[in-house]
Every structure is written in structure tokens, then in C-alpha cells.
Image (cartoon, rainbow, N blue to C red; front, top):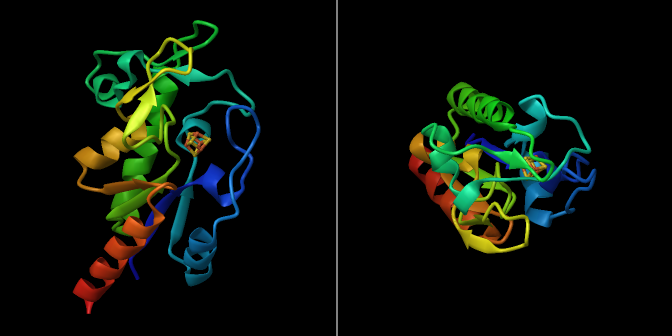
Length: 165
Ligand code: SF4
């Protein structure tokens, strides 16, 4: 069975920086019932507490963090780059362990965002970009979707399952 890496906060688990969560979502509940969900909160797995100060990447470029060019900074000015990179490494370990080809991650998170991010000014300004874990997964060949792309993710999963048979 094709497994899928899913952001824990989308599964109703209260791991968001502010202690909140999202959901429930019908598709994710079905995937959980099928036993294909591998849950991960990269920030918590990387060693950060909940709740925690919000963090952003200058320019929203998670790939720049992976390349050592950019930090991840909290609104209080704390450098949390190491924790974000640790979370991304754990995601890659899970992908390797479970043969994962698809991830369904929370949109616009400095870890999980797959298309857009905040620009590092903590002003709510959105830019094209991606989170640190999302960027690491992409580089590893994993297709990253968000909760705004359930239909596309389900269609891709169906293709992958067809290819397995
Ligand atoms: Fe954790 Fe990602 Fe959800 Fe943030 S968006 S709380 S890092 S799972």
C-alpha cells in the first residue's frame, strides 16, 4: 500500500505553534482508516515545544535554508534553523523507511508550505516559496500537496496505486 506523509496538525493534533490544529478532513480520515498515513510535525520532531513563537524564513525560501544560505527566525529573533533542519531530516528518514512518494502538508507553513510562504517580515505578506521540510521532500522526489489540493493528491495516489498493480 502506498503510504503518505501528512502534517500532524491536519490530523487534528494540536501541534501548531499556537497550540491549535486543523480538520477533521474526510479524505485524511479515509487515508487513516486505510492505514496509509504517516504523521509528522517537523517542528515538534525537530525539538521545538508547543506552543512556540511563530517563525518565518527571509523571502519564504525553504530551499535556501537547506543550502545554508538563509536562517529560520522566530518573531522574537531566535534562530531555530537547526530545529527546522532536524525536522526535515526526520521527514526524509520516514520517506525512506516507508517508500513514500506523496506528502500532504499544511499550506503556508515555514516547514510544511508547498507553494507559498510568509516573507520573513511577520507582516502577513505572502510570497511564492516553500517550507524547509517541503523543499527537502521535493529534492528527494516526493510530490508535495497541501490541504488546498485534496483532489489532486487523491488523483495522484490513485495513479500510483494503479501502477503498483
Ligand atoms: Fe507542524 Fe507542519 Fe503543522 Fe506546522 S504546519 S504544526 S510544522 S505539521
